[in-house]
Image 1: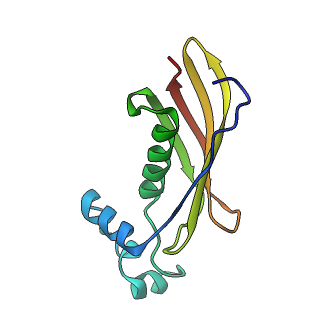
Image 2: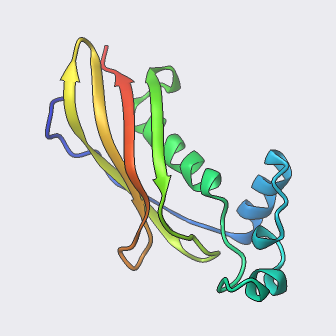
Length: 128
């Protein structure tokens, strides 16, 4: 891993079933994630995926990319947009720097329209 290296991108489609399973597992049963009519009543286009579900999918891709979940030492993102059921999120990134056996990565997630839904993503991974 060297500064400037691009990470291989990965795409995943968001489903209502994923959203419901995440709501159950996390205990976050906010109706904007589960109730179509309620979500529309508060001005959303419909139910939306949890930001932490999106971040979890990014973390899964990242740990698969580096080969071992124990190498991931830090991960942070800004939730910048909504993901709806049926959206395809693509995760990607690049190596910003490598120092002392730790690579600092810039990571992101975007929908099929090219809109970034996860921005300002920073991850630190062990390189050795």
